[in-house]
Length: 260
Ligand SMILES: Cc1cc2nc3c(=O)[nH]c(=O)nc-3n(C[C@H](O)[C@H](O)[C@H](O)COP(=O)(O)O)c2cc1C
Image (cartoon, rainbow, N blue to C red; front, side, top):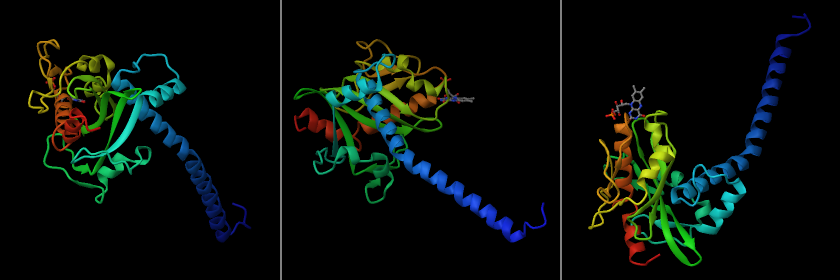
């Protein structure tokens, strides 16, 4: 090291480099935030469209095409989870359900449940699929524990609120090829036309080890994923919890009775 580089100079120089890079990293994080938010929003929209079957997973459609379809067909609402009432004063676009679920002032402790949902947001998102003024179907977000991770998905139901239009699990940490198959469209295609509720509107839909029968013979079950019984059970628990009384049950009852 040249003699005229004193310790003080070295410390000053190192500090200068640190300040320079931290400004650069912070500036790029701030400038990318909007783009990250837009990508997150697009991903949610895409998965809602997959769940409804309005867009197929293997369909050749541009990002702009998907956004156009979403805006044409999907109407989001925020509801009070306990009563199912639409909260007209809360803008769906700015409502963050994940944040609401973890914030003590915006959520309550969930009753003990097999899906291992810890807290229930006071308000929650629902999506209507519309054809002009007519509401054709309804989509609800679901989340629950698999074997390794929290699984997030959207479940789309026909206007009778019991017949499944489709499901899309878009975020989880289950093992690829085993529990990770929950996001394989070949598996989720088996859900279509199956029923969530029994005649008393209790959620009885289940992922069945050993295989389910045809839609006509075994409407309340779908085949479990081979080698992934624990993730499959997590999916059953998740669906039964969110479609039950603590979840979207009150909203779906209101919807069936025409209160939208
Ligand atoms: C490395 C590893 C990863 C696994 N990942 C999963 C998983 O994501 N989901 C799951 O249900 N089971 C997973 N299993 C298997 C479970 O431990 C358990 O054996 C399985 O769920 C039982 O399913 P089966 O009755 O269909 O065989 C994994 C096992 C190993 C060794």
